[in-house]
Amino acid sequence: MKRVLSLTSVFVLVGSAAFAQGGGMMAPQKISLATGLQRSYDGVKRNLTEMAEKMPEANYPFKPTPEQRDFGQIFAHIANSSYGACSAARGVANPNQGKNLEELLKTKAEFVKALADSFAFCDEAFKMLTDANAVEMVKQGQNEVARGSILAGVIGHDDELYGTGAVYMRLKGLVPPSTERAAAMRKPGQ
Image 1 (cartoon, helix red, strand yellow):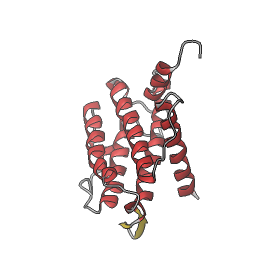
Image 2 (cartoon, rainbow, N blue to C red):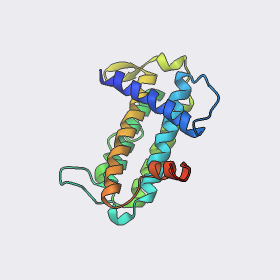
Image 3 (cartoon, helix red, strand yellow):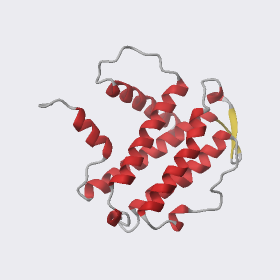
Image 4 (cartoon, rainbow, N blue to C red):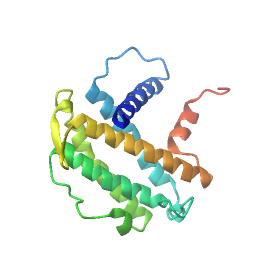
């Protein structure tokens, strides 16, 4: 059920992103599964990259409650997860195996670099995605999973953590990057 909801969310986000990019006035398009996943990944990658860059270093240790990850650890968690999922989707060894970046990284520069490195690694998984190979079964742990399902999971996970990071930013009086972009695109009086 979670996978169905995640995939549904991805397709809603893809449609929303496509609509927003054209200011609501785009000519109708046929967007394939692979293209939809690639566009959604590009969107969440942009949001997270801008979020990581926008938050001042002094706020990286911030936790809304003691039980939560601090702001920097959000990006380390994304990197850890992305390496695992994208290595499975690509059919290659996880280059981050055995490393817990949430415990290793300390500075904003380290968190931003880890996020960028994990995106560079995942970029290859999304670039190689086609409608045909999206349904191919690949090994993930003990399971065989459709490649597209793994990559949809990356997008869903990253979107969830962007939402979490947005709350941290709001608590520090900052506007999340996607909201800032949307506000800049609105016409006066809207």
